[in-house]
Amino acid sequence: MVLIDNVNSLKKHYPEIWAKCRNPKLEIKDQVKLEPTQMQGWTVSILMESGWNYVHSKYNPEKEAERFIDSLEEIQDRHVLFYGAGFGYHIDAFIKKFPNTPFSIYEPNMAIFQHLIERKKIDEWIPVKRLKNLMVEENPDDCRKYLIELTNLLEDEIYLVILPSYKRIFSEQTQTFIKMFRDVVYAAHERIITGKVFAKRMAINGLFNLPAIVKTPNILAAHNGYFKGKPAIIVGAGPSLNDEFENLRYIKENGLAYIFAVGSSINQLLNAGIVPDAAFAYDGSAMNTKVFRKVLENEIDSVPLIFGSTMGFETVQNYPGKMSNFLVRDDYIIDLFLKDEDNRPFHYIDRFGSIATLTLQILDQLGFSPIIFTGQNLAYRGGQVYAQGVEYTGTDLGDKKKEYAVEVKDVHGNVTLSGRGHVEMREEMEALIQKIARTDIINTTKGGAHIEGTVFLPMEQLIAEQLTIPHVVKTDWLEVISQQDGYRYDLEYLKKVIRELLSSCDELGKIIRRFAELLEDMDRFIESQNNKQLEVCLTKFDKLFDRLQANKLNMRIVQPMNHMEFQLVLKMFDDIRPEPDPKTKSRRVVDQFGNYLSSCKSDSVLVKKILEDIHEKILGEPIVV
Image (cartoon, rainbow, N blue to C red):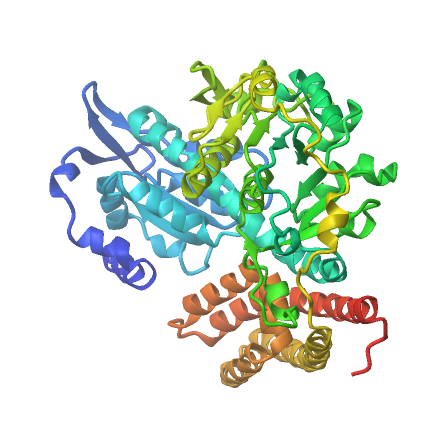
């Protein structure tokens, strides 16, 4: 009876797992056997070279599991991933102690899982929806696929719990899983930060930045070959920058090359008395205000800012110096609001994880030659991560970074340590260098990671052999390109779009209020167990959802601001579609869609205010709808 119930549950919730169980590799089941415990339960033993090893206690596996779960610390609101199901004693103990905490299970041994479903009723886990994902490994290729699927739409941070006996019995397999888990979760963490946290920032930044974009020259549209054949230096904030201040000061004083600061290097350069010819930035987070704090607080107006359309609006709005801009690819705010009067297509810069790589693409398209890197370590050097003078984050290599460090080749051919983030930035930069197929990209970063496609030259040698022509830099370059024929934005078109969106905003408010009323009704009918009225409410919900999807403000701005949350809503819809019980289905809708709706409501109010503000700032008149 237990097996039949489990088969039905697997067919319904995890058909892929059921397919594996239907066609098991029978030879592996001989290596696993069940044994009764003294407390009238079951334990599992695995045949190894040293003999049979037990997954659970032979005496009292329930008490053993309770002690293990009691030892777990700081679970908080994280999603728990159990590596090793065994016979599920620890999972039962976990549910008892943390009844509201979602969890997933990864079982690396198919034979153990086959014994589990014959004896343990897993339906006790699935229907209450605490078990979000069930993964059973049949071959090594399953591991990465399962972990990517797990993290793809998971909102919460993952807390990994490894059954202690699995570390002993499946030592090598467990270590492989841990390494894969770290790699996949790290990548997922970066993706979620970009996709979820920055989703709102991208829209808000784009809206707030519209006035500055309209009123400042686009460097890619207006340069008109002004920089062609001139040398440029991209200055990063790596530890090697400390070695180059005298060289950079000599280059600046003699006008031998344009000096462009990326990231926090602007602070080190200014501290050293070197005023860069411009700073490039496009970080959409509030962190950019920390990077430019010295410039903002001291109102330093001598460094032009070349900013991306997606950059954090706080810095753009308060920047004391002159500015130029560039448009970032897939910036849906620009695509929605701006159009050239002559219908010329906009020139976009690709998105990159590193501002140095993005700056390389811009300098390549502006015609600079050669393009020189300095302070671009992309590796640790002498226990340092950044050059001295970075105030908003630590400069030293801590124990945590050492633990995750990887070995890479440096510019001298030696082995050095680097972090995962640095490795990804370097590989991204190398891919761009290969794409643009240039041979005049020089890396002067002493002790930095080797960057394929660049030539390493010490800065002293570069100055002596190549940077020999003085005064190639013109300090009034921004004034010159400001006079060139750049984009001329169609302000009447902009006004029309703003008015349409504000009108759409009023309609969106009505839809959100109707949704709120409907969810309240559903909540009440869930409590009274009125299935008939719940069915009516679900039908009304579908129709109202169609109205939401037809609303322009929602589709063009509000929904993209909540992209990750909306994907989770769609996933929820898929999950509940086969659910026959209207109470269970409605509960999921009320809880999950209610949270999404609340976020949309607050975002629509904010967007309306910003639209009214930018209408007045750009067009010089208050909005009249």
